[in-house]
Image 1 (cartoon, rainbow, N blue to C red):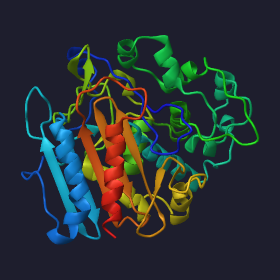
Image 2 (cartoon, rainbow, N blue to C red; image 1 turned 180 degrees about the vertical axis):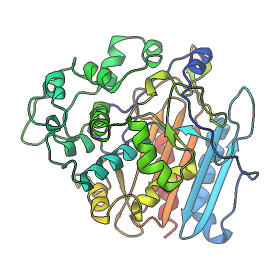
Image 3 (cartoon, helix red, strand yellow; image 1 turned 90 degrees about the vertical axis):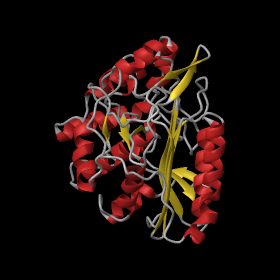
Image 4 (cartoon, rainbow, N blue to C red; image 1 turned 90 degrees about the horizontal axis):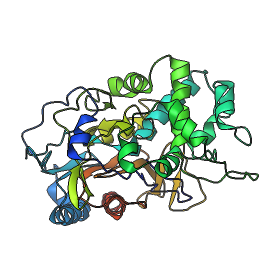
Length: 400
């Protein structure tokens, strides 16, 4: 989960995981199995010379993070019809099975753009307007959260609602082990947020990342669709695009081809794969694969999920920062090749880092998933994940 922050991008996911291996295993979320893995761990681009320089920073990152103890690194870069991939390491320390390109991984807050697409589909269908007050569709939210003023759908999407984040309130109320072992509904998450006072509001509400925004959006989508957020994401995104490895965490055992992440607890590396708190969560609940993480924003850029005008509105960054910003469920970074913006999202959960970035036209993409070197949980953005973002942007900017 990401913490409330005025920093526009990358926004961090501040879940501090502390579970024993036994507890973590008991909360693995259930899903359909991923496709059979390919026999090859890496594939060179069709023109090795042209991709060698753009990918060099990614190679250095891979070598460094593996040397420091990362158990798995999966990368796919697609530039102008060429592809460069790496899949190095093991799925878990227990079975030592070689990791594959199509293995699934907990993507954390890379869930958010998918929820945003489902909201925008409702807008396109005329069932919702971006500037509607949320209380028009969910009148109970006003009673539950007592906002100091109207909260629009748009302000939930771009984290400008001012709504308190439930995550920080949870961390203040119980030990981390108890928080992560607790399965929660959207309403329960918002009830926790309601225990925190809202910040005073001026004429404009500043950007402040809050997990609660997407819990509210999940309720909104579920109310208008009559289905769970996981079912809606499957219908809106996974099935139309054939993303067989992308789905919402559930209550059954996790997929066999899941990459396990590890964090330090009591100076011991502990398996932290998919604890119960993420089950069904609209801000952190999805698992996916690196190829799927590229396919989703690529399809968005190409107009396969939404009308081009809708995509343009989603992907327009906040201009408060020249180099990076946040749109409607999407982070943005300056594209040095075109002067336009890349868009995508970053995931930072204990044990894992994920990055998915695409150029505005979808011609250059980089997606990465790393089971990070075991470390103590952090309250700030993991520098290893920041380095993933930096290296991915460097590679894309060299692939003009």
